[in-house]
Image 1 (spheres, rainbow, N blue to C red):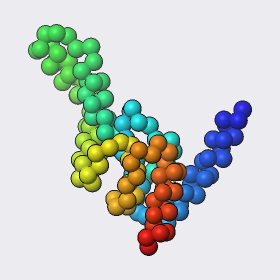
Image 2 (cartoon, rainbow, N blue to C red):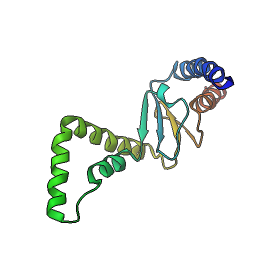
Image 3 (cartoon, rainbow, N blue to C red):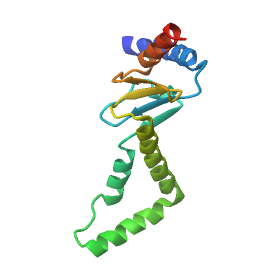
Length: 140
């Protein structure tokens, strides 16, 4: 029973830190992948999963037949069935990779504040935001 209480207490703390870090911040991004989850990432302005496109492509190519023509037809059907929602997922996935690359992010997880401050390797959003807030306080 201690875990739910701990979780309940962490959520307000996370929100306070997020508010403090974002009071002068426009955006908080979490850049990660499935192997490096970040606790509290849902509170970020944007979460970029660098492996999202690969996961979507894996969905599209799952259980394909060995015949190349039949496989191509099946993938085309899956693309058509996915419609604009699938196109949007793919667009967002590749845009996320592009945005992370344009910021020079090469290590995950990374928390980016205002596209200016980056904290690498921190798996808890609240701690990353606290580090950014401390840095901003020391370097106004």
